[in-house]
Image 1 (cartoon, rainbow, N blue to C red):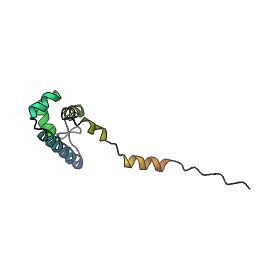
Image 2: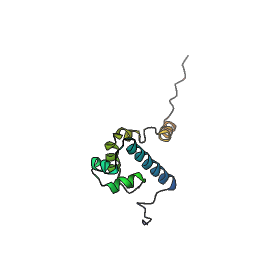
Image 3: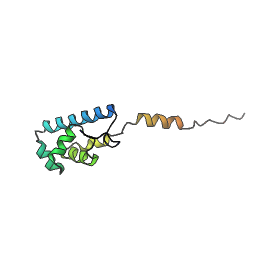
Image 4: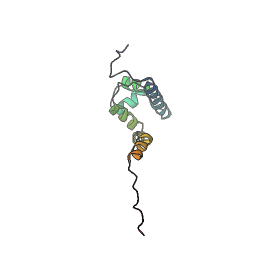
Length: 106
């Protein structure tokens, strides 16, 4: 069992999302009828690393996740990360100062 350190322990919601992402990567591999070994070769990593990715491991670097997505021809999906920043845009809009027009002189 892995040690619970700051680097490996994730909040439960984030852990669940990592597991879901791993499952989605596995399904993409299976849809393409590729073995773990084939994806590992294309992504230049070990089959064990692919298995860890498919289980949603948070200890695998994002660079390797990117190489696996590239090997599956899903690398454009990386551009979807933080694309819709609803909270950030709302905070930005709240901080904008509203300009007021000068009163009309008669």
